[in-house]
Every structure is written in structure tokens, then in C-alpha cells.
Length: 205
Image (cartoon, rainbow, N blue to C red; front, side, top):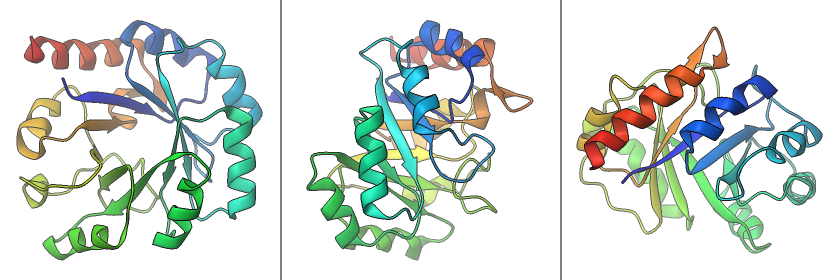
């Protein structure tokens, strides 16, 4: 079954849906965003999650020393780089023992060529928007149909219970990354998380 990451966890009340839905990953945003958390907040939230759920930290163009300090403080499993980080930057952080997911904004076929320069553990495809992720919009998924990458293929941008099956059938990602698609008024909804996970699991049976 395609794995699921619920990104942008920032509130105590969002944890009930995560505990019941049991996604494979949760994401904490450490970059400027309405979902931004401090390392202290993220650490507090992770203490109430099942150890089987992997922790992803989302960073945008942060100085390496500060990024590594925060990643260590929160005991992250994966570092997601959602800015203009260079291939060399990614390799240096990866060399510190972390799995690296690098995001790429996709709007036209040539945009997929960006990935060739990177050696990452995950390649995250997202739509363009005013924010570095979390815009709640999709890109033309057919652009990524049958794409092959060395690491995991992560599909993000506007995915929800209504279109998750179409997204998976079109792109065949290893992981779907969901944020606003399971929110109500900017807060992760237990009902929407359950609906999405049930939809995915019913098709996987």
C-alpha cells in the first residue's frame, strides 16, 4: 500500500486523528508558515505518538548547523528540504546520517529535469504556489506518470480523500504527502484523516 505522510502537525488536538489514522509519517514544519512549530513544540508532540510513526522535519533554506541542531533535538528520521538547497547541501546533511527528501516544484515537463542533479532518499513533487508547500493545489499529475527515481517518489499538493486514488493510479508514488487535504479551518481533522486512510486502505485490500 502507498504510504502516507500527514504534514504540518502543530497542535495537541490534532494528535487524536494521527493516533487513530496511523499514517506512516508525520511532518513538522520548521520554516515560516501558519503551521510552523519550534523544536520544543515538535518534541512535545512526538512524545504522544506511536514510535512506529516516522518523524519528518520540513526546512527551507536554513543554515546547515542550525538545521542539524534542530534535527538532533527532535530526533528526526527524515529531513525534507523544501527550498533552494543545492545538491552539495543535501549531500552534506545526508552525510550526517539523515534520510533526505528533496522537494521539486512541478508545472511543466522540463521541471522534472531538476531531479537529475540530486542524490536523495526521496524526491517530493509539489505544485507551485505562493508558499513553499502547503498550498493545497495540485499540478498536472500526468507529467509524472511512469516517472522513475532512485529513491522514494513522494507526491504532494492538494491531495485529499476525494482524489487520492486518482493520484496514486496516475503517478504511482511510494508516499503521498497530505496537509490541507485533511484540515478543517486550518486544523487537522480526525474525521478527514480517518476518511482518507479508510479510502486508501479499502482500495489496497
